[in-house]
Every structure is written in C-alpha cells, then in structure tokens.
Length: 284
View 1 (spheres, one colour):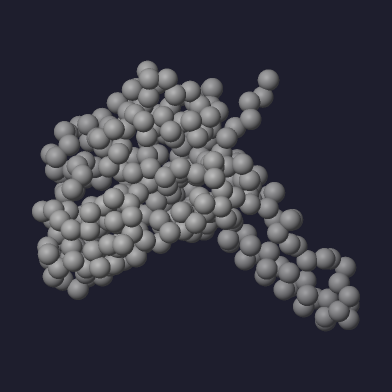
View 2 (tube, one colour; view 1 turned 45 degrees about the horizontal axis):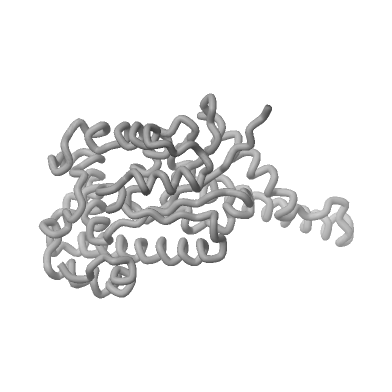
C-alpha cells in the first residue's frame, strides 16, 4: 500500500528561527524537512524565463519562415507546472526515509512565493515562524559579522543602520504576506512564535505535527524537542555565547543589551504597530 505524502513548506524572515523549526520537524520519525531548496527562485522562475524565451524564438521563426503561421503552439503554465512539480518532488524525495508521511523544505523567503507553491502543490501545508524583530536584528548583525562585515557590530555605523532597517523591512513583509495567504487558505497554514518554542515547545510542535497529519504522542514530541535543542546542536547551555557560531546564544531578549536606544526607537517606529498586535511590547 502506497502512503500519500503531505508536502509542506517552512518560511519566515531571516534569523527568525527557521532553521531551528526545520530541525525540529526533521527530527520526527515520520517527517522529512530539508533546508534551503529555493525551489521557486532558483528552479521554477528560471524555467519560466526559459519558456518565455523559447516562445519568443518560436514567434520569430514563424514570422520569418512561415508568414506568421507557426507549426508549434506556445508553451503555457499548464505545460510547465507538472514538470516543475516533478523536479521539485524528485529533489525532496532524495532524503525520503522509511515511514515518512510528510516531506517539506525550509527556505526563508518562501513567503514571497506562497501562491506559486500553492499552484504546484494544491494540498500543501505552510508553516511560518515569527520572532521579536529586535532579536531578529541582533541575530542578523552577528551573522553579518561572521560573514566578514566587521562594522555590523559597530554601533552608529551607517552599514549597521542599513542592516537593522533591512531586517525590519523583511520582518514586516514576511508577516504581512503570510497572514494574507493564511487568511485565504485556512486549515493549511500555521504561524508559530520563536518565543513559544523557547519556553513551551511541546504544544507548538504538537500543533505543527497535527497540521502535517503525523503522530504527536508525548514521547515523540519529547524526543523531537530534546534532539533539536540548543544544547544538542551547540554543546552549550542557553546564554553561553559563541559569537562565531551559527548557534550563538540561544536566548530570548538579547536585544535589551545588544541594541542602543536609537536602534530600539527606529525598530519601534517601523514595526511598533504590528509588534503590538503580536504582543511584542513596543517599548523596552
């Protein structure tokens, strides 16, 4: 008997905890969740551009050789969609494990391509993780530092101000796009909070596994949470910082000591209304 797989996609603003959520999901014995497939931006859209170019070539040939009466009809979305889906499925299933019932991919900017993913996978499920934008900004600054931008940690530098502003813009965009999509597709979407994963991860993961239609017993959830904890991946306790590590500190509220007053005020000005709606206090 062949089990029909549930396909799903994970997204969120950069440095919101998407990788953590991916690893939590992937730790479930019935779930496969890979990361950074970039299926739309790096596979689907280039294929669409290739199709459009080919259609132009056909049209030019028809005008020059056949007086505008082509032998080949243009390719359209109906021709392309099954092939794009087939390629994505092939890639996703390369990590398929025995007993899997749900298979997915985490790519942060999938929030830009939710409608396209829905066309390719009409029955797919979608998960979005949200984190306090001030902690997002801090995490992004340290990532930029690790990538060679030494001025990311220089308070008051123009580069740092741009990084913080870009982080806030992406945070707003991710939430607004996912919320709009979720409202149009109830029952297929779940938004989780980084802070809830930090303090009470079990009910969050139960909701996620329920969405995916996989086993959500207490034992399974306990094993998942333990295997994908900060301690498990970093070898350190939350709060023990390694600025050079992807798993830097593992705590909530780091922004209170890492950002200066001007940066906090700017984030409040840009994101304050939505922060209040999401129960993120707009004041320190």
